[in-house]
Length: 165
Image (cartoon, rainbow, N blue to C red; front, side):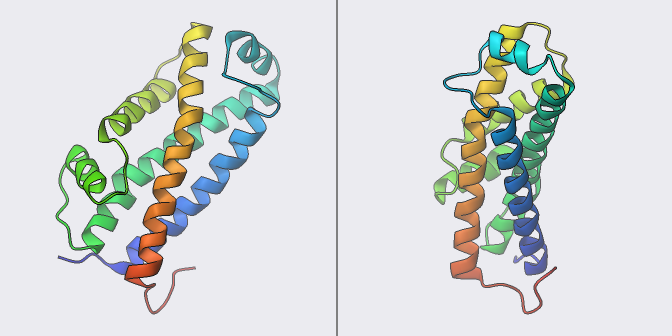
């Protein structure tokens, strides 16, 4: 069964936009930070309204891109290449087999991290700093996965006759 190619291209364009926005806020939030996120840096970042806004924006954009990629783009892509989709874990294992995801367990951990950052108020600065550092590192995995899927789609699937705007 093949998916609607227009949906795939819309999702690819959406994730490209999310990727640019996540890269932008990552650069703004962590500008000047050398090394890992640590409690003293986090205290400083949270001492201004701008720092708080950047942190909230980073968490929101990280979460949104992770959700869109894992819950929408990956299943649409798998259908477009003629694969059957299943649970999120099944899709991740299939994407790993096809060479688009490096480690399904890391993606599940990413989902848990996303849930933690979005749905829980973390009071412990050391714990929040560690979670932000991990999310910061995982932005590269999100971007690389999107780029790999996009490259494959560009080379093998071809855009629909009328490209969504």
